[in-house]
Image (cartoon, rainbow, N blue to C red):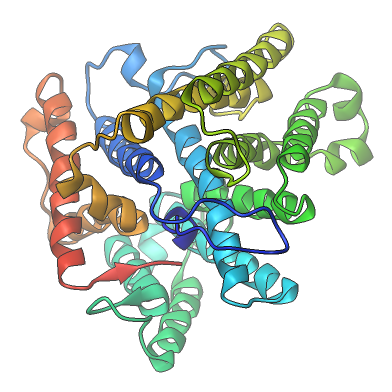
Length: 409
């Protein structure tokens, strides 16, 4: 997930340059998004929460703040794309090398996402040659072998990376799924990381086609929203050919959020952009208003649904993300302030590690038969625990990062 981590802006003759140095507002947004995601994931098993603290049902035509956390993750992926790709250009990557790097990162996210989804459901426990909790822990061991590093240095030696890939292959071979245990792994819904991988791939493709220019990115955003909308038309669904052509609507709805983040990064941090805070606020307000207006125009026909990844949900969420980031940029860039750097900075630099730690802890606890106290499974104890747990994960990431442990795709 290195695309979520790189904010160092390179100088590039091919594409418009972005400002150099760490972009603290992006770091804060990234870290807060990861920690809020950990919190709401922990709340998922808590009984007695109000509706606004849970995902809305697929057909509810509504969204809670929980339904906006994943969009914020996609938005920050998009904000990081211009910096990450231009940094690779500065390092001398050719177009083909750049495309291969993007493909490798996207497929890495998809690979981990698919394995995580199959660990959560679809397995036939009685046919598995080892407990699903042990199988799950081996996923993260394989991922660390391929993309991890120690002592803050480069990735582990090539032998470790090949061993990690071999372990992934072995785990896929050992997997038993289906009602009778005769089936293997399947993509299912790709998992959060897998969905990020596909949206990242689309976002990078648009950004490279646009050669880093804001107008081209916005055009790609419009195309993605249109594609995601056309899928839902009765005429499209009635035609097998058209239904197949527009069957990737969810990925393009997610790409709307990624490209909204790309556009915001270009407008706020392009070297040729107007840096006057009032003008940036006007742009953010106008951009968010257009996104929200498009969502409102679509909503009577297409419900707001995070589960179904409808275009109205994506556009409303993108509008909210633009305004939230504008506020953070004002706080950091406009007023020169920061926000809890001791815990947020390590998470911002290691988002994949932070995201996966709760899954590792959960699998390890399941393997040894431990569970959290009953108090944490109902409100208000579970609400407080979710908040504290996210902070404990942040502290763990800080401790690991200080000892050089990294996990970056």
